[in-house]
Length: 95
Length: 208
Image (cartoon, rainbow over all chains, first blue to last red; front, side, top):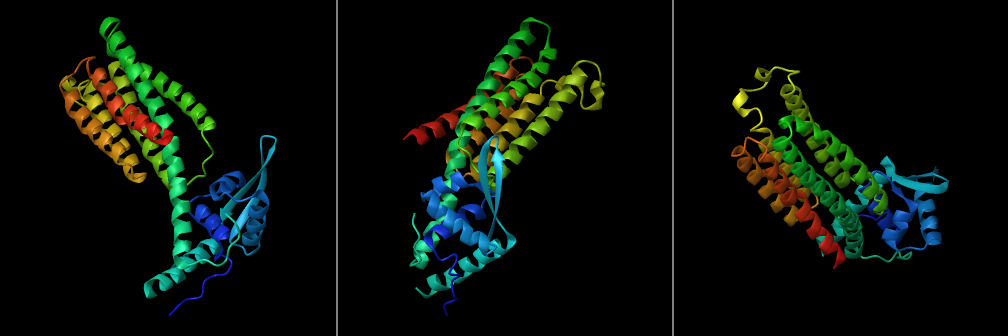
């Protein structure tokens, strides 16, 4: 039986963001942008969506004089990611 | 990568795998220069200390290793600043813990021998005199090899694993044959095999 996939994570870019953050304590916005190859605007929109859902927290700070945006996964985000991977495996088993 | 919600299960898994592997590759890439740098530091200081030990006053010159840690740390900090920013990951933290533990253990052993060599602590506190300066390079080589091998296992790099094994085991047994200043040449060889060679090979792989 197929388990429902979290629609928030079932998107190429948002899934890539979560996958990057899941193995890191935290990551800066430019690093995520470089690793995903997304545009800053698009990435910002997707980060906001994940943040609004409580899956990640976004900290806006400064590195010297430059603004710096740091993203990290929350406990809810970690649980949601685990549930997503578990649900994903039900699709792979059937095939 | 653009917004796309029509993902297959396979594509989703591929994205997860790619993302995790990509950050691991960045860590491997960034480890090349620090390995070469620390290896070169050990080689240079080994030769300097061996020369001074042999010609100007004996094993007390081993205290210069403290200067090497300082020089090495400053250089490492400069390399880190130059490298691309990498987030703190479990892999990165594990490697850092391995080498911090190595530093603490070898530093601790070094300081004990330094205090004993300078008469601050009695030699009998740790071992009979005949072994006092014969074993330290063996032990440090072993720790060195273990650190390199574990790093290779964490980042799943076969070259580093093999170099660590050769450096650790080879250095351990070779150093036992050289109780005097010659053991520092073994230390230099251990640094070349355990740090410089894997560092250069990773660097060459990065440039391909």
